[in-house]
Length: 227
Image (cartoon, rainbow, N blue to C red):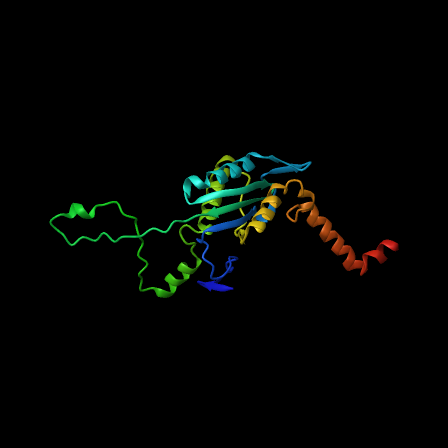
């Protein structure tokens, strides 16, 4: 665990040395803080969205309008998390430096160009630290961060007393091939139907923890039941 200004910082959960701007499909899971049920309830295998749930659903479908290189796969809102597939299709562009030495005709240098940020600094350790922790433009992390931010903004405006928060991190899985894509798509589609056994379902956690407590106390659940 790294430190910055004397404070520990949790290391990234992303795959080390992998460029998350790479074209491909990514399975994304984003949870609410402490997995609170903000987004509705799942009854009889169907999601009944709350207003918060409708907000996060709506903004997910807006992602391609703001990131033109992104298309969407399957997506679902669950009571305390969302699952979705992001498909990146970045095109490589050639960047040109429009620096003109013709002082007599300055208007020639006023062509529309992409704005570039210069990261030259004499404060190398600080610069390297922020470079390491900042998401790259066009990356999965940038897309998810923007999505979480706009959802939080609108939910807090609508429900200021609810103290809505996302979990700080999110989960990702790089989808490597077509069979994996199909398997994950089916998992997302059928997630509401399997909610009773979902690891994010609090009742499932309670059952598992309760069973573990019984086993710890008795040493053997079968023996405990027999008694």
